[in-house]
Length: 94
Image (cartoon, rainbow, N blue to C red; front, top):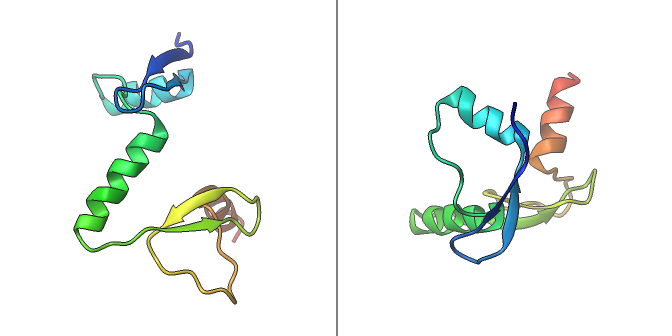
């Protein structure tokens, strides 16, 4: 029913893929329009908005998979920190 679409980000001009799965998610939630910004630009906008409200984003490297992600707490160097995907996966195994 859905197929991947290539969309040009209105902020940075880079092309990104709006996957069939993402389109299905949008349809299930009743979202009428496609995304106009790539994930990097959306995340940057969220970070700027949070920063204005006093939240600071910290860049981390996931202790499990190595993915780089932003978190809104100051990580401690003596504790493992995980990306949202690995954290969710670990929570599901409890």
